[in-house]
Amino acid sequence: MAENFKYEVIKVCKQSGARVGRFTTPHGVIDTPVFMPVGTNATVKALTPKDVEDAKATIVLANTYHLYLRPGADLVEKAGGLHKFMNWDKPILTDSGGFQVFSLSKMRKISDDGVTFSSYIDGSRHFMGPEESIAVQNKLGADIIMAFDECTEGNTDYKYAKGAMNRTLDWLDRSVKAHKNPKQMLFPIIQGNMYKDLRIESAKRTIEYAKCGFSIGGLSVGEPKPVMYEMLDILKEYYPDDQPRYLMGVGSPDCLVEGVMRGIDMFDCVLPTRMARNGTAFTKYGNLTIRNAQYKEDFSPVDSECDCYCCRNFSRAYIRHLINAGEILGGKLLSIHNIRFLTNLMEEMRKAIMEDRFLDFYKEYTSNYTWGHGGVKPEKNL
Image 1 (cartoon, rainbow, N blue to C red):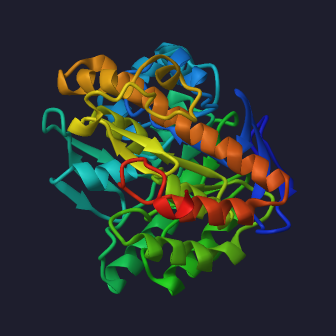
Image 2 (cartoon, rainbow, N blue to C red):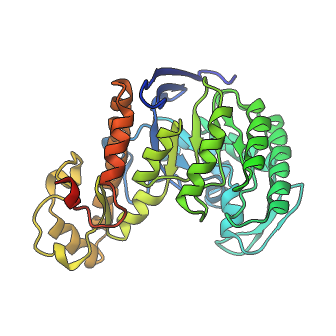
């Protein structure tokens, strides 16, 4: 096991089986379940590290693919690693770059060796395989790094999905052998698309490589949410109890609650900041599209139940004005709110688990939450 990593289960809810854990890393302790904001280019868009810390985030992500292309891993290494480069002294996780290679590059060639692709910046040609991905991540210096994997689309046929799963397992073996930094924990990634037998096979063969954590990839890639939940249901019995479980790329409030119900410990997504820049705020009753005309003279907080800087100081009318005027501050303030909303949601779930009432919490939350109805409490619950 890498240095200074430890995971312990603190509590398993008697009602639901959901769990609270404590994940110790070289840059601090993470209470799980946890939501991790995404800082693609070594920054959570529009926010300072203090903004992110004030929103109660305890770990952030950075993206290997983007940082490899710009400014380059060598430069980050010279700066003293990502923590010093971006002035964030808490834990950092980097993804492998695999998902971006497949999703952002139209010009790509996949082989058993790796992937040849074109830069989205200037069209230049690059090659990335397991060894290259791990070398970049070793230089970036995040606490948690990912094995290089092939992420397939939700409608991929069985034959290709099986081939991609086997290729991912081969790449996992090569990733583990290439990993040289004992101060970083490498997470293997379960794949298998939407096929039960492939998911189970991938889980069994992948977890053999897990030392202190593993990931579930290839979900939330366009499939209906019930299909994602079905995949998580069939995987649950194959998870080891003594390691954190990371569901990649999932960040809507309903999916976080459903994921915790299914034993997931770690989540990440660009959704909260992306939606914020487009003028949408999270609430416990659904999304509030604040750019809409109905909020023009609404001087109440974005969310009266939220303790974030945005909700404590500004009105819906003001935020709407900023968004519609194209002011950067609008997206910044809503980003602060959306991240704090999710970190607070995780706090509430941890509390419910500790008090053995998570099933009650789950039922109440899912009955209240209606995607996109404007953040207004449903009539049936008044």
